[in-house]
Image (tube, rainbow, N blue to C red; front, side):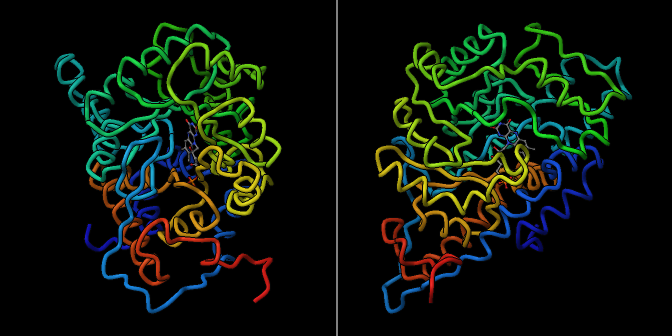
Amino acid sequence: MDQIVNVEEFQELAKRALPKMYFDFYNGGAEDQHTLKENVEAFRRIMFRPRVLVDVSKIDMSTSILGYPISAPIMIAPTGNHKLAHPKGLFSLCFITCISGFGILWFDCLFMLGETATAKAAAACNTIMIVSYMSSCTIEEIASSCYAVRFLQLYVYKRRDVTAQMVKRAEKAGFKAIVLTVDVPKLGRREKDIKNKMIPPKLKNFEGAFSMEVRPNKGSGVEAFTSRAFDSSLSWKDIEWLRSITELPILIKGILTHEDALKAVEAGVDGIVVSNHGGRQLDYSPATITVLEEIVQAVGGSIPVFFDGGVRRGTDVFKALALGAKAVLIGRPIVYGLAAKGEDGVKKVIEMIKNEFEITMALSGCPTIADITRNHVRTENEKL
Ligand code: FNR
């Protein structure tokens, strides 16, 4: 583990650890994967304006999100199906197949992996995990596995009763906010999943609610499930519906324009996440870091603006904060860590990015988060 020094190396290890179908599922994006690449590349075009001779003998990265203190402005983005990424989970699957008569008890113990490992890492790193609606462990299993603060990411199913019930379960299990993802009225065309005929695992959260049947050899099983289950008629008026069924704070994830940011404020949500779903939905939507500032300016501080897409380094975290984000979410790097080294891998990914961020703060002359300003970065459009 000591030999791994950055997220790119974890990505390589994950590639070696996972069957091609699963690595492609985690790593891939939509169509030409232009947005996927741009999310990372656009960060490279932003440079620093570091300030010197500032006392940085103590660096304080801590912040608070919706009133919950965390060690650094880095949270875990919702990504589905963590059991597919967990090496022990894969091992257990083979093991259980071999000893199928051995008993249900073992079966259950061995399968307490996936998101429960990620959640434990979140707790150890003192950060917030946003649990995906498509998690492979139930939200109750995740809640009982650790004391990390958890938000629940939500999709809205055609079966509204199933979604409403999930919100109630999240409240009961101690989740602290709902993150409504709004950029999946239809699934983006992920060509690798189509070619691999990607078969998603059954979602334990929704067992019995509707058919989880997959059609092997008929393209992407993820796409088949999404078009069967997701409500593509979702619109702004449904924020009212969501508000009517929960007292929890609501964040909207998937905003890319100042127009929609203003609509979100009008709709009375408690925060937004600037996101293009990690380049997995509409290809040629802009790299998120290039639209962050427009959205922050439109919102004018009325609600917090969170950010995701392409964060691979502590320098990226700093750049997003300088352009106005309250905190960032990281998606793929977490899954790479989980696939490469399980819970310890996730911890190492978070700690590594935190460490890079700490050094960036010191070298930019910013001892606290409040010291990070717009003047600390120069975007490609700005003259020297
Ligand atoms: C995602 N993302 C996602 N978003 C969401 O709201 N619900 C979900 O279930 C998922 N599932 C998911 C699976 C996988 C494998 C990936 C890579 C992504 C999108 C995710 O929350 C986030 O927006 C992006 O991953 C951020 O980009 P990076 O950090 O991966 O570059």
